[in-house]
Length: 267
Ligand SMILES: Nc1ncnc2c1ncn2[C@@H]1O[C@H](COP(=O)(O)OP(=O)(O)OP(=O)(O)O)[C@@H](O)[C@H]1O
Ligand SMILES: [Mg+2]
Image (tube, rainbow, N blue to C red; front, side, top):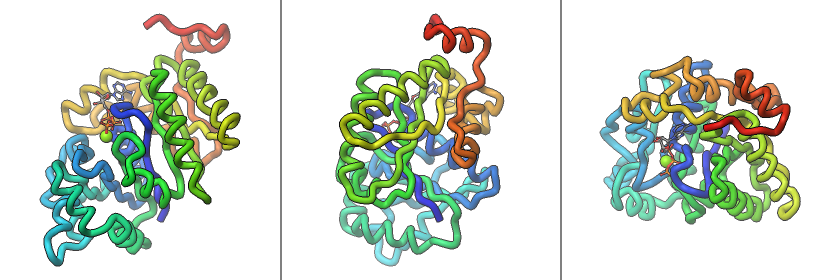
């Protein structure tokens, strides 16, 4: 069982959509997948998947409730543990103890091949503790300079822990492959220079209206619009990591020109 924690610095950059769509892709590829909504108290992975779980992390406060009782199956084949909305979930997790909860998840070893953990924005103590148990970190950022800065701060905190897992960057909402690559290079350069740690590029996901629509439809874009740019980009990420090649959107002629001449496509 491999644990991948999906994080960012800044909020609203696409962590939950990334976690959900990659978890669906892994399930479609035949892996046994658990998606854990670690955005405790503000979880919305269930909404994006279009499921209404009967239990979520707040249920842990009830006596006798175990992690098994929280698991709900999605039609794609993945299992979800919802994060819950409201302060009850946070209180439940505080009462149960994040470590006990994570060790119960670890005890599910053998039932799952992949565990994806979506996290809340920032570097709150829950997020830092989840990063510490990760075997692989997916760091989501956008071309927005504040997102890149916050991604760097997340790397700084993450790499300060001994034995910190490698970080794979996903540049989301990019206009083109070349814009996404430039964002990755900037972030990797500062991490290499100031933290002496290099990053890997997992992939670039283009800005795509169909993704927005998929959130409204409550059906992940890889299922609701499988031929859209965003769906293609998500689908390319996990195979690219496995094969050791960063995935790039297959851009059209404009993208080719842009990367050849360092130009940006007009938006
Ligand atoms: N590639 C994309 N193209 C177009 N819109 C996008 C893309 N990625 C994300 N969005 C928009 O950004 C919104 C926020 O995405 P998401 O909920 O995944 O972010 P988040 O990082 O999990 O946010 P939070 O920090 O609040 O948990 C989506 O509902 C969607 O409208
Ligand atoms: Mg989120």
